[in-house]
Image 1: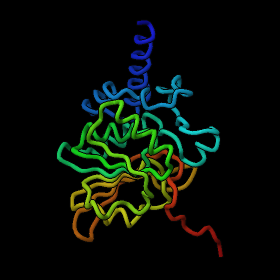
Image 2 (image 1 turned 120 degrees about the horizontal axis):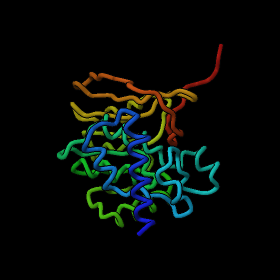
Image 3 (image 1 turned 30 degrees about the vertical axis):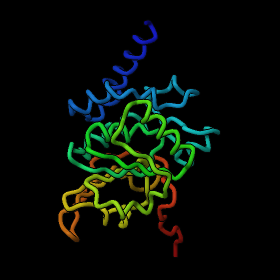
Image 4 (image 1 turned 90 degrees about the horizontal axis):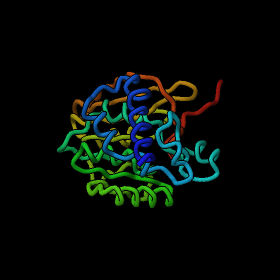
Length: 229
């Protein structure tokens, strides 16, 4: 009983001390963070870190996992992305980078259907098992290279990149419906920008970058040349 109380206190503190101060004020999002048990998506070795303000490695060794992007984003990043991309109950969502499945669970709790692409086989398996245990039936994890998107099943209302890229990928923008939104963390260390692109017409888009953050790179997305002439 004490352990359950301690877990709920830690969850409450995560929401009040990390997430609210990051301007996550949507009451539905805050309620969802109470309902979807983040600790159930954290590897057993790192359960104690479930509610901490840090990225959580999903594979060993830890240093390689964080460097390679095999980790859960910070709780405040996940919550703010969910709030700002605002999936709706009738919408279809594509996620790139399933990780542990936690972000897919949050998205699926707001949207009609989520397809999450994960390039690393053991993470795809972990995410799939976590979602099944959590009783999330409208999220599907596929082992695939998310850099290509999923044109055969698009267009999508929402596309979420659960990691960073050097620039917004045109291939994924092309898979948005008109009115659809893409969320990504864009740029280079130490400062990246949360970037939200809305498709406003067949060939027109609007972009906002409302907050600074940083996240590990997603695999196989193009990097601009670093040569200086």
